[in-house]
Image (cartoon, rainbow, N blue to C red):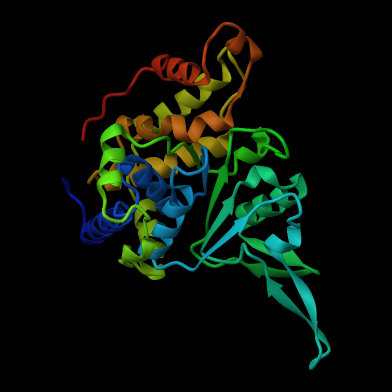
Length: 322
């Protein structure tokens, strides 16, 4: 239901629904994950998906690139992947006798960094620097990444042999960390009933352009946020910094990330203003991977999710008159 949206906001809302409808053709029973990834894209952020193989992470990335008509590249991260494979390198042009920049895999609109935890820390840092700076520097020359620029990185939490998990300071570069999980019982039955169990992203149609996405991000930026909601976000951030089970609380960068995705959430729910429910909708996805928890939480049998829920419960929800 759209409230008092202007024409541009209505256009972004309709466009977002079209994208979701296209992606759900191949990602069955995971509408919330599709929505949250799209929210991150509209917020100008990057996505980390931490899950086991075979649940559709790569299919989701490919389907999004097709629905959004984005240039897409995928790299399988392994121990022998070099930073230059990601950022690019210079080669000598035999005709001009000058060095020419050859773009790396990360120079695209949507880059899928598959199993980022299976490569070296140096290669991870090279990608994270591109994500943060929006450019790469090779041999003293700077090259900007395309706009829009989205990184979807995956981590396999099972099996530690040959892995290098991202440290907390680097996890902060991702707007959200999501888990797709197994499909529901009914969703899996529907997949098995399908005539073609080999899901093909060819059925996904492009419904947006690069210009649409750039304009949509600007529209999201203009969503109204009241002082009460800003105070609510700041209070939640402060609560994470004063919790006995949290060693390192939410950084200011994390608060800004939460604000950005709240604006996108409000728009996709048909409003031109943010309410506290928008903050709570993505709070865990935006915040939990940015926190460093005390070991006593685990010793006392308290999960990280329970700690985050306690933080939410400790802050009074403001009443918004709109």
